[in-house]
Image (cartoon, rainbow, N blue to C red):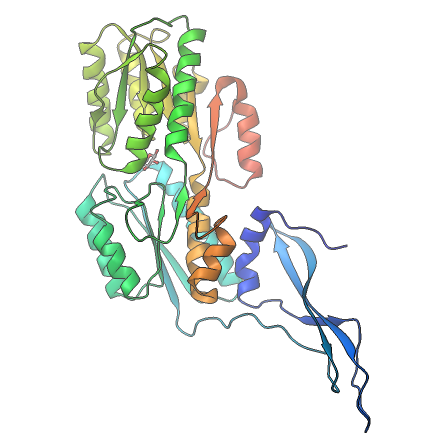
Length: 406
Ligand code: BGC
């Protein structure tokens, strides 16, 4: 019985199908060769493809898909092999460019490296490299992209710290025949082929809802209460969209957001700014950490000021440094991204674009492409109460975790 593949299964196996690992053709209906001197009777030939694919680590399943049904009147050999596009002749280099050195980005790196391993196992000659600047550094991102273009990379996935500054270099790559997608944070006014990542406006709204809940649960709900925001960028869209989404929820509920403090993805600076903001605003009721290290910075500053329980903290991401303060009851909730899949699917999509052609690969990966060019990787809102459940889900999905729920 043919098993229907879930979208995730299909995506994780796409590389194997692409390289033609198993693309045996099977013809059902009639077999053999119709010989004879008189015209053969019309015969209906149903061509089907058998695809054997590996899902997850070891499960093997087969799907049989009807390709076409034709009526032929001449003698016909009905055995046919359906072949996938040949693997490209030259070795493929795929580059993934992140935004700063942080365990958040190490997870993206792991995802893209895993994709590289699977692609090589499937017979593709591919190298997947990962690069991040130390902290937010727009010129360094552009320079790195430029060097990838000069080296003839086969695809680039980039998280642009500045969605406008990246526009010309994306165009340059595309003109050189190199597909470019964005991950983690988008540049929708560029010609990038797709964005794989969080819907940051909606995720910001989720953070706002979590903040309202935290204020209520902690007995801090107060009309006119002040909430501080710490972020790592005033240009990256993910930062701007998260802050907008957050404000759109907490402000109508009567809270006042302070002007965001920006550390340009420098975690040490984030801590200094958090401490200074707390000192300057003794009446603060809440603090929102926009980037991965911002929540931990608020947590430490709140602890050092002896204000645990008096300031509700909501953050983003789920590395160990994000989860420990949740376990300790210092941070109320986090909006956990699924960045592993940004790296994993990002690298696979770029490889497949080289195998199948850009459009075919994009249509396979991105729902409703080309009308839609966004693949939403999703988020989980994690609190102390659902930490164990989240841990179980995240490990079942195969995402690496560097913490335990207890
Ligand atoms: C963001 C990244 C950022 C990282 C830094 C994440 O929340 O999505 O853009 O670079 O935090 O810590």
